[in-house]
Amino acid sequence: ARTVRRGPDGALQVGGVPVTALAAEHGTPAYVVDEEDLRARAREWVSAFDDAFAGLCGGADVYYAGKAFLCTAVARWVAEEGMLLETCTGGELAVGLRAGTDPARMALHGNNKSDAEVERALAAGVGRVVLDSRQEVDRVAGIAGRLGVRAPVLLRVTVGVEAHTHSYIATAHEDQKFGVPLAGGEAAAAAAAVLARPELELRGLHSHIGSQIFDVEGFEVAARRLLRLHAQVQREHGVRLPEVDLGGGFGMAYTTQHQPLPARELAAGMARVVAAACAAEGVDVPRVSVEPGRAVVGPSTFTLYTAGTTKDVALDGGASRRYVAVDGGMSDNVRAALYSADYSATLASRRSDAAPLLSRVVGKHCESGDVVVLDEFLPADLGPGDLVAVPGTGAYCRSLASQYNHVPRPPVVAVAGGASRVLLRRETEEDLLALDVG
Ligand code: LLP
Image (cartoon, rainbow, N blue to C red; front, side, top):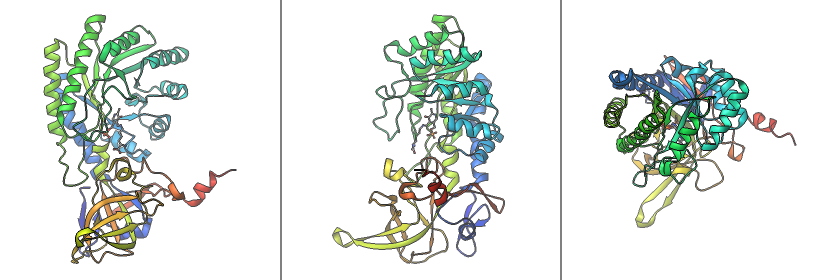
């Protein structure tokens, strides 16, 4: 978060509010969102892509991928900063609609949308439904026909980008559940099937190659392959597809090891590739869209924990490791357990000159894999009652949170201009018990 700094008392401050005050007011654990930071990133992604594509196709559309984190306030913020909203379930759609997002500026994804989800999206007038399979072509056409609407659709294509050499959360190789394979002419046949259905308006093709990607090359290869198919469909059917969606997946820095490309460089690189590919295929440049989630919201947020029990373990060779248990864990951030994701941690409530000790930040859950930060040097005098901040938890932490061990999910608190407000309240034991109706 951009507005995080140490105050005169040594405590971290965000948006002008000390973490000690946040903990006193909202309790811990809590996700703390720096509103200005999130908005600035949203603005930057929109203007970077709009500028890069202005001369080619009149600009670009930048969807916020709501799966990274969604609540009504964030849906409104990103809309105010010029983003469209990508959803992939009825639930995410409901948040967007509740937030007052213009349905025409929303898209519905999903590899197994229910009829009810499709109906709801079409009835609301959602701007794009992304068809994920050959079967969905007929299913969505049938529902559109029943509702008497013409559904604006994109067709999601798996372009066969191999992700072996990168830590992609890969989605474009062919042996997986998403999309219609480019290989074997399947995607071309699905596009033909869409064009044959009068209830569907084929706006263009879509590709999403994975998540937490740093290398532009994957996006470039995907764009080239997708545009080749785009040109082929246009030639074979004598139509013009007005759009192409290149998906999301742009990496963010969780630790100093990651160096993501600035949005502007990424956009410029992609614009060059799109321009070259369209020229090579002899087609006009369609309007480009992208769908960043993590890169917009991830860096804006840190999780504030209170430290509890600590334990020192002797390691082979005479070294030792300190376990610092915090009052949350894998229920509010499952990414270390699930993806071996790397985070950092810092003593947030005060300054310390104590020697740094190799530490592992762990949670309070009943399993040894309940790790938040695998390795971090934390001051030797860090102990019970100290506040610990784990930055970079805005994406796929609250949205993947569980109530494992009947631990209620933490609140999401926004900070801006010296004040904080709750966006999502803390769950209570009563919330959890209220579900128990047996
Ligand atoms: N568009 C589509 C079609 C997607 O499937 C995704 C992510 C995005 C956009 C946004 O990707 P982003 O820019 O946020 O990387 N739970 C995993 C990530 C799963 C991503 C799923 N799809 C994690 O915590 O790393």
